[in-house]
Image (cartoon, rainbow over all chains, first blue to last red; front, side):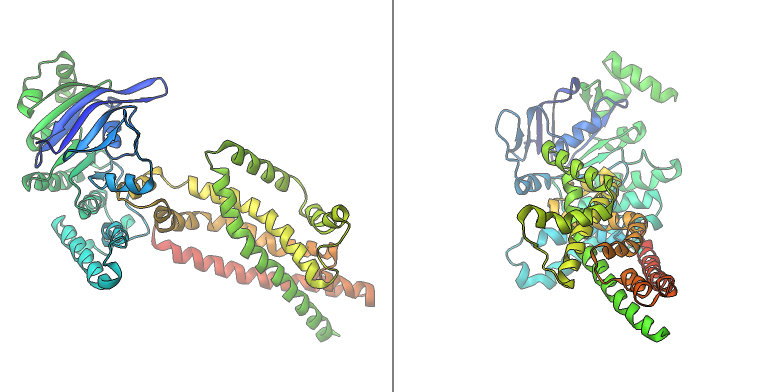
Length: 261
Length: 218
């Protein structure tokens, strides 16, 4: 069974329809890449999944549980929303690290705050916090940032910052990790290190949705590709089909621009 | 005579300091509350606060002080401030707190709105509560942004305390002036400048220290 089922998502800002009837599903342990030109609705789709935007129509189910259904009255309570959000992790284009915290603190802060809600927090406070710290360190080591744990974001390169952001998203062990153009804000020579990390996650069967402009990377890493244009899913399928043998005219035109550029 | 004057002025400085300190204690949190109100999505509240800020920033502080001090007596036919020195200081602190809260609220709003939306969103997707996002993420970044404009306002406050002289609170300028009336001396009034300078000098050092302390992040 699919870990994520997105059905008929609609989103409009005023009169502009940004997402039109978007439906797709995602298998556990697979990587999905969403490609398309700017303004095609890719980022809005990710933001809907993370509850940063509320869709105007459709439903979102994770592991069979309905997280959002426009036809039903959804709980708008902060607590419920927070629990739902934790199914998803989000890596932003502009990293959005917290500047006043070190790399390690960035990775551990949310976990530490969430741990306070555990029933045994008072009893085992020390060991719980220690466990979170250790997990955070492991993640940063895994990201190749062993030497940078105590650095503040402004002391890190863009590529390093984005790797911290990936560790931060992984720290809460989300079911699905979302990347919103993770390399678009980086200098070309720094994209490689971030893509390498994402590739590593894919090899370890992390369930991921990656919005990206890196076509070669998408073809390499993704198990499935979705091409979006003007708020619609125009074409989806496995990478070789969508990127190498696109059926739709719009997909062909989009890819031509990329291979030429 | 010099020592006598110095002693009297030090007494005045203490009153000045009390007005200054108490005004900050009340106006800083009140300013933060007003800044939240001015960013509220609830339109009537936002409008109300905009009107209040307009009135307070649009009229002289001295006038506000007089209205706060004499107004209740005229309306209620009794002086709520009690006739003594403490009552006059209280009235001053009330008027100043309202006035400064309005100025602070604008600075705070600028500080909060200047923080990229991505900071809040990052907190949200990490499952933080609204108050956690404010206290753990937004607040310190806002403080860092508002230190320079706030230091301006706070330094202005030191000198605005001299307005309390108009309702006969025995602050520094009142005491300096008193020698003109009692002994025909002008220099004690000029001498008060030294005290203000020292006060502001210490504050400046303090603000520099805070700026340096917050310089560890960008």
